Structures are given as C-alpha cells and as structure tokens.
Length: 187
Image (cartoon, rainbow, N blue to C red; front, top):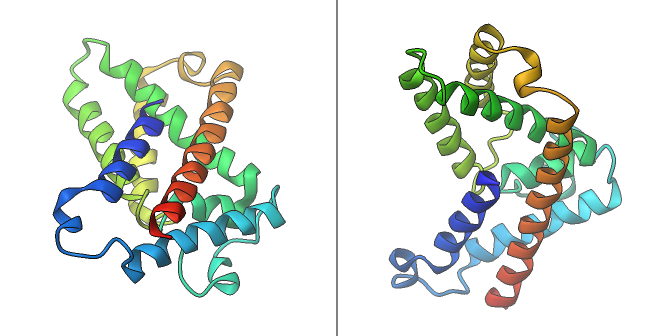
C-alpha cells in the first residue's frame, strides 16, 4: 500500500511539480519520450505476458530504456517475474516493519534500511534501476535481519504472497493509469 501511495505521490510531483513547469513546456520531448517508453513497455507485456521479452531485451524492442523500473521488470520478465520481484521487496519490507515495532535495539538500523529502500524504490519510478546491485544489497540486508531476528512464519507465508500479488496488480494498474493520464496531458 505504501508503494502504491508513494508511486501516486511521486507521479503527481513529476507531472504537476511547480519547479519544472515554470521553466519548460508541458510538451517537452523528454517527458513525452519517457511516457512513450512506458507505453512500449506495456505493449511488450501485452505481447509476452507471462515471461516478458527477456532479461535486458527492452532496448531490442524500443531504442530507449523504460525510465521506470517497475515497467522494465514487467516488460522484460513478464507477470511472473514482476510478481517475484515485488514479492521479494514486499517480504523484506514486511520483515523490517515487524522489527521496527519491537524494542530490541535494532530500530536505528532497521529504520535506515527502510529509508534506503523507500528512497531507492521512489527513484525507481523514474529510472530503470531494476538490476542495480544497490537494491539487492539493501534487500539482502533486510532479509538477513528478518532471518536472524524473526520466525519465518511472521513475515513469509501464503497470506503474504496473496498480498504481494494484489500489490503487483495494484502497481501495474497505477502505472497504466499514470501512463494514460500523461499521454492525455502531453497530447
């Protein structure tokens, strides 16, 4: 839920933020190119929904990168890969969330990891950073904390996978709506 809300807020700032709008035309080529890349990513997902077009193959189908990590994973890895990617991120956040609520001296470390992940994932809405090592270092640290200090049942199970599936669908829906609204605004 936090990722969805964060994505909507980040998108709103991107589209309606005052700092850039006072300096540029709303029809700026780079903004349109970014939204066009999102559209092409959705077309790739539509044509290869389960497994995508293949790892690092986005630019074989469109000359620019997706400029959105979520769309990049969806296009290249398909719905299955996107679900796995979102589930990995979600379960790490779930473990960190549980650890934050406990009085065990870990709160500063856990809060730092949460902030790092939120920052990275927010930037990922505007950049193709799906396969950058930093994300996986943060996820590995979060997983290590959860594995060391929690029981597996607390943060990983069937209920959590259903939530990750719902989150995956929600993220795709928000991205699709964002793309459609942007295309309408940019003409």
